[in-house]
Image 1 (cartoon, rainbow, N blue to C red):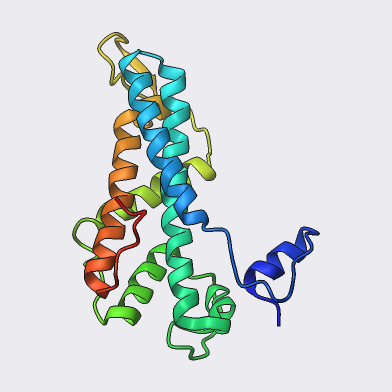
Image 2 (cartoon, rainbow, N blue to C red):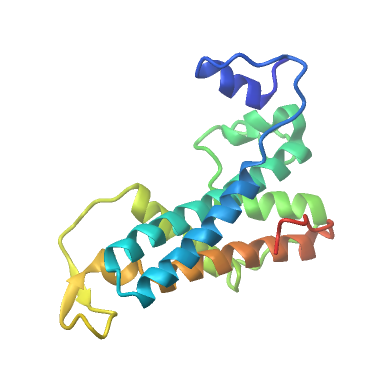
Length: 203
């Protein structure tokens, strides 16, 4: 039976060996890229390069959220094995019990459910870092499902007086740093709650 990665490869026309057991650890790459783009956003902000600051911030936010999604998916695969696809498509719960499919489980639900399944404890939804994670997902979704409604906000920069677009006021180097710090805090808390040994790439 083909693995999840093999199915994905077949769909885009890539030949995959049926005996392949290795995978590309995208969560590590996404983690490093999110950090680098946050650093770049900080540099651009200091140099008053506002367009670059916006570009790097958008990338840092998307990458940080994507890292957390890739990470929890891998943990879910370890828990559920071949049943993961049914869970990911909403046909079974985290215990493998059938349920009436309504939607794919949101990333936040995955983090709560998989963490509890591994360590019998999970995040407090009303406290950090989970509240920050919720905000990060909102920021990511705001970018990926951009509506572009006309709006403005006070400029966050001393050299730019008056109003700027809401996007420019919101997606600054501060938001990029927030995204990366949230990504790191979620991973750290996951290891605390589950008791699992932390991967060396989580710093």
